[in-house]
Amino acid sequence: MTLAPQSELLDHKFDMCFGHADQNKDGVVDAADILTFAARVIAAVNEPFDSPKATEMLRVCQNWWEGMASELDTDKDGKIDPLEYRVGMRRLVGSKSSFDAASRPVATAIWKLCDRDDDGEVSAREFSAVQLAFGTTPENARIGFEKLDLDGDGSLSVDELTVAFHDFYTSTDADTNGNWLFGAEFQTA
Image (cartoon, rainbow, N blue to C red; front, side, top):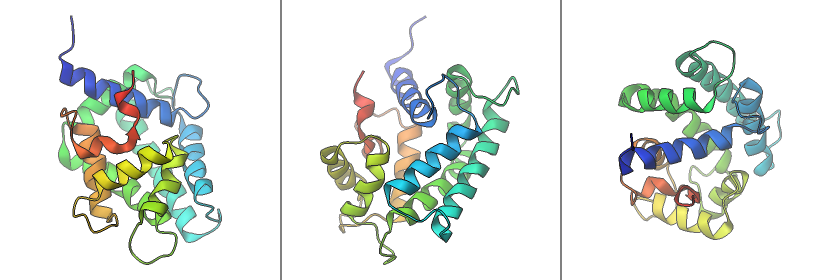
């Protein structure tokens, strides 16, 4: 059975995100991977690990892991394999309220880390620092920022980042701006 192109697009994005989460590249995602991911983002912006922003990011990622493990780890072995991730993400994104409840705290914590000067806005330069932690090229980070800045005011709001998370994980439209959340990486095979 062949998947419809839209299903293939979502699966490709889910697989890419699984790769981001699997920090030690052992083929599964576990709590250590998620906390390593959080530490990588914190380090990318040179945030002190004992700062309120860093501790919030670690707390949010721990909570995110616990929620994801509860929903996606079907065999309850403490690890999420690629199939569990795909199937579970399809189920999770099918419920907007569940997805938004899971993703908004992560988007908010990342947004706060991005806001290096605490002015309540995330500039292109600030956004780029976090994007580098995802392996996004500087050029793709710049384009991504422009695509995600929905109101064109030169900064990203937490709402714009939350919309990007939602669109990236749920949209079957290959041209949606949210697909630029991690640069153009999802478009590569």
